Length: 340
Image 1 (cartoon, rainbow, N blue to C red):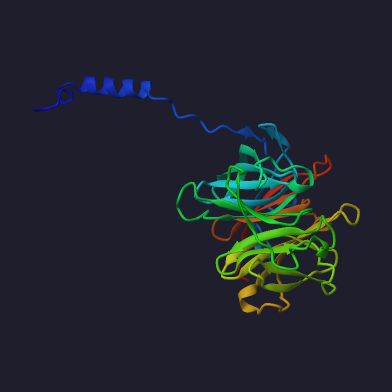
Image 2: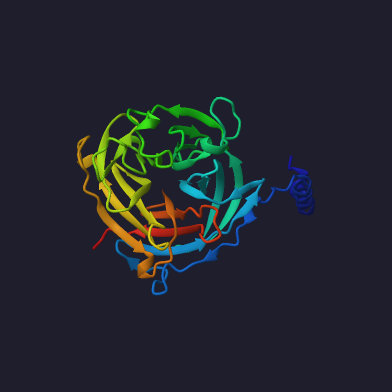
């Protein structure tokens, strides 16, 4: 027997409409508009231009904002969740932010602040406080496997050196044991120059690097450590400090170096590429410069500390404004260019 709806099309339409009205409406994603302002990388550089071995794809100044009582400021690192299309950011105060970048074609044009959450202590579940909240390096696990809700964040700390795994809601999962000498706070040059940079490689595992050479390190070198115990010497030039890393896979790493505020507020940021897979543990690496941006050359940069791989050869970089009115939180979007 034919269903009565087939004999009364108007009734079918009315029923569908009634069901739609009765069903709870899907809530729009809550967010705080950051009122991001586009910033030129330099007056002579347009979006799409090449500088060194990068292509400029947009930069935004992100003003401080408050969401759920947590201040968006002092951003130290980033991680991209491709499955959720979220950019995670951590602050020096132990806060995790969920950001949703907005693009016009290839250009970064805006950012929405979707969520703010305190990172919590592993054993007590209480929010991180004071010196224990100094998060610095971050990367993501299971962020590109086309599965929802299984991502974890790997985060490194200063003051009390450690590496913990977190869920994207700020809940801690586990601690990664540190190899010697990283597990000894006395080995570091300063408690504010500890595990500054971190990324996760598909073959070498979790990699981290102190901002300054350890006390007994040979002069002019720090080391990239794997939590599995291997390490490689990384030469440090002048007053540059390694502050961020992005793993490209198969032992290839982009290192972000920063020199900030040592001479009349001059700032520079340098990206270098190293290939750990081509070196033996204990070797001295030979970093290849990708690009150097310096305020004395007209580049409008600030205290860049964080880097995250996006898609393909594209990356986000972020600056830490130190919660000072004279500094800015800048989100820079670039593409690595491999051809000469």
